[in-house]
Amino acid sequence: MNPSDDFKRAYRNLSVAQLYEEALRRREAQLSHTGALVAYTGRYTGRSPQDKFIVKEPSSANNIWWGAVNQPLSTSQFENLYGRLCDYLKTKELFVQDLSVCTVPRYRIPIRVITEYAWHSLFARNLFIRASDSSNPQITVICAPNFHADPKRDGTRSETFIVLHPQKKLILIGGTQYAGEIKKSVFTLLNYLLPQQNILPMHCSANLGPDGDTALFFGLSGTGKTTLSTNPHRPLIGDDEHGWSDDGIFNFEGGCYAKVIQLREESEPEIYRAVQRFGSLVENVPLDPQTRVLNFDDASITENTRAAYPIEFLPRFVPEGAGPHPRTIFFLSYDAFGVLPPISRLSPDQVITYFLLGYTAKVAGTERGVVAPTATFSACFGAPFWPLPPQTYATMLRKRLAQHRVDVWLLNTGILGEPGSPRISIAHTRALLRAALNGSFRETSFEEDRYFGLRYPARCAEAPQLIMNPQHAWKDQKAYQEAAQQLAERFAQQINSSGGTE
Image (cartoon, rainbow, N blue to C red; front, side):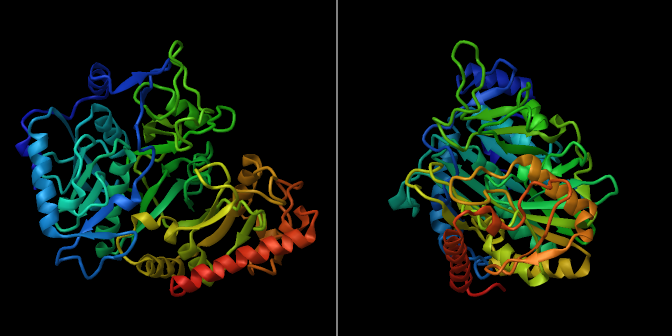
């Protein structure tokens, strides 16, 4: 299916420089002093999960995890919306990029991205793999921010829509300028398609050690997934989306989509330099009107400031975008309550429990209405992107862990101690990672937490000043006990409400 055949006024496969020219000429974006293109997404500075729908059609209806995450749209509503969208786009100049997803040739899928904005075309070019069979795209994405749905006619919640048709492999996006919808809707469709080939899709980053040991990093936004996987001593396989096949790990994408709020060159030099160059696309970061210098500390537009750049902008990456079966997996959780150990080694049953919990915490001030730390759960560390029931992915993970010798660690990237305590430093977190990866913890005794049953190393030789027992970080022991008990109860409630861990 090639919808772009009907769109004759289309710029096809423009280069980065050409897309810059078009975006600037149309006043869609601005230029920073380092050469990055800077765009603003208007009303929507993040995803609109309540406006995402999956077409309920016979070939997939019985398999989809219907509910608040995956809302149904009828085939007649889809056809009506699609028809009106096509009529609208026939009058517009459009941008078409022929790309692909899945780095391993055996699983590679050609993808066509059709956009109303030039900067969205650059986003797609940066994020996906820049090679494709343009004559036969298997997935098509159409993104038209200025076209709005009619909720009464189209069955949508609002004028904004993200609609996936599993059988046609067609994605429609409208009413929002947030470019991340393009990336995450493709990920969602892959999460439906790839399990049919016995591939476990994962919302994680991955890197490769000097001995060929792959490490995976699962985590929700703000937990440090991109930061910790970007390591000068371990080339990056990919920063966000991967598949685990019978042959090993492979990246779905060809670029990175990094969160850049409070980005610092001294703490994250590789990402900082990748963002600050020609070809990178920066979203919603305030720009000085005179000097054109980006202010990464300014969250006046949103905390969710982002940058999209090709993976080759990093100094060390794996060109093949693939690696062997992982030896080590990290689950990253930002614990704002200060009661989880800095690092814990998980048993096989705990792995599945924490995988299905997908725990992190929202911190006061990061979202409107959040005035105190709030526990957040997202199944498999990415509930909005799973079209199949979470137990499907958990079962696939359990089988792979049983087949391969994998150490799984729960890493607290939040705080340790009373509310208001500083976040565990990146230096200390990286020391914990090194110790887990190089086997140093094998020489260390372990202790067990009484509230969560987590076993954690008694010490870390590379960070001797770091407190490993969270209880010892609290002056008020009664307050610690109450906080730990409350979080443990939230975990139990979440497990019970989701019908167990498997």
